[in-house]
Image (cartoon, rainbow, N blue to C red; front, top):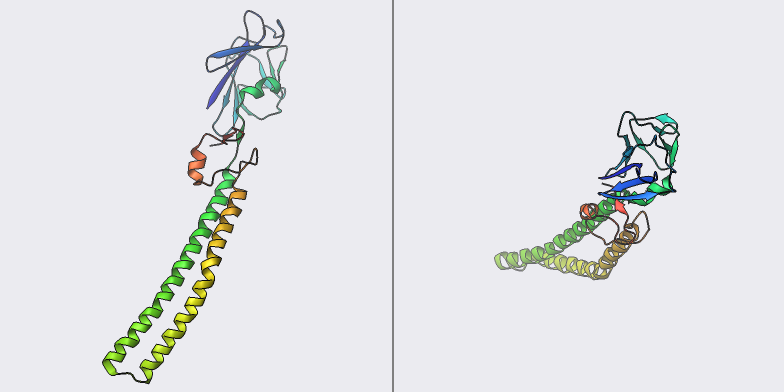
Length: 227
């Protein structure tokens, strides 16, 4: 959260803006009427990018879109006037003091979909490996039966079945050995293309969304994330 104090400079009657204890004056000398007090309003910038304009004294006249206010959330483009003479507080002056912010809530869906698809790929691969291991159990069963009851027709059939199933799984595994890595790489590339700063459009490092949200903002354009 950031606070900006706005009022009249007592010595020059210019507009004075104070942020973090540092003040700067704007406009020509005597451009701000005396009906604007030295600490007239406060602009509070929330972590979500909201802008709250607060009148600092009951004797101050503060208007937003021609209506008197004591405290009001404003948006860019609202007409703000101060004092009885309706001194216009322009956005050209305010904008440099307001951090640029971007909403990255949409990136959470991109990250969640990536995680879900990656998990489904892992589950699919492990299920296949589990089924593949069953051929070994079938071969072992045939060997046990062969030792216990001799090499009969049923045992011979088990040997043949195990050999055929093993061959099928070998062919499938050979095909998947190249297909699965390509699918994983394609998923990674597709996600990276969508995982980008909503302000400047440049790609972000593919990291956990919560870690991204907790960072200060875009490393490229320096826009801050709305919390």
